[in-house]
Image (cartoon, rainbow, N blue to C red; front, side, top):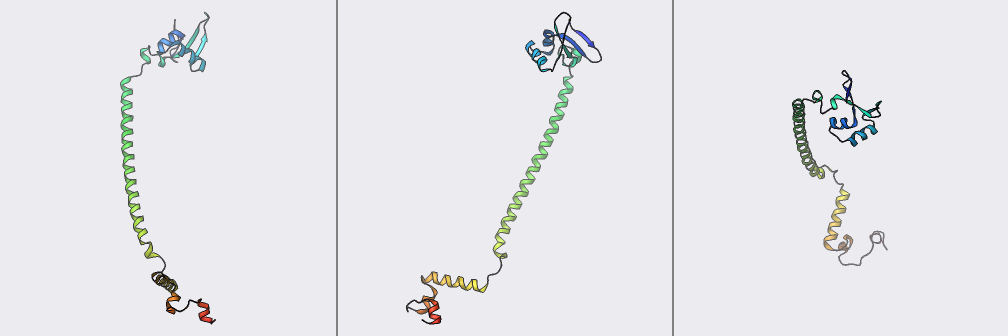
Length: 162
């Protein structure tokens, strides 16, 4: 029933039933492929629908079968290549982790040096801190300890009278 349209093009015209058998699928799958436009169709003079098949798709045609040994070898080559790429990436990730660890340690060391690198304090700041420390230890303001029990007056009255 099938006929070759052209030896050079490798196209075969077959019925839907025969196309299903040659492709190893159901007739419904062939009809769906025709609907989607992935398979070409023609109406024959006898009223039947003929499907145009490429010989490379024909599973029953011995010349159309791909050499499975060559295919397996090709796939094994690709797997070997991908494994080497995976090893390279793993080494790169390990190097990055070491670099990040070293940078973290260097950052911590520099953070410890920050107090050494701060600007020196002025004498006014030091005097103010000393007065605050003395007042905090005795529980009273600095002016009160200078008066030794006398009544507490504001500093401006002591200075200017009053």
